[in-house]
Length: 66
Image (cartoon, rainbow, N blue to C red; front, side, top):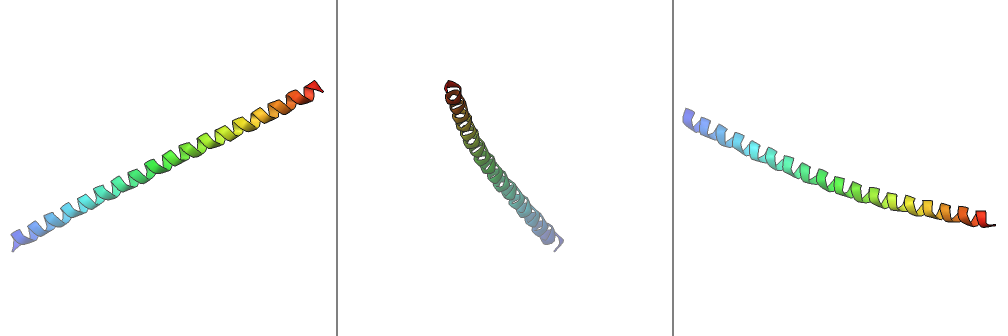
């Protein structure tokens, strides 16, 4: 009877380890995706800022010509 209890306990604990590892892997994948999306958003914002700066520069040059 004790042996059966020990085997059951070991199997139950092993199952928890697998579940924990799976949860950690899923969490890591979600974080990676969030980072990639954040990088894309940052690049888009940088491009828009660059375009806005170019427009300001062009307007300043036009005003200097007048």
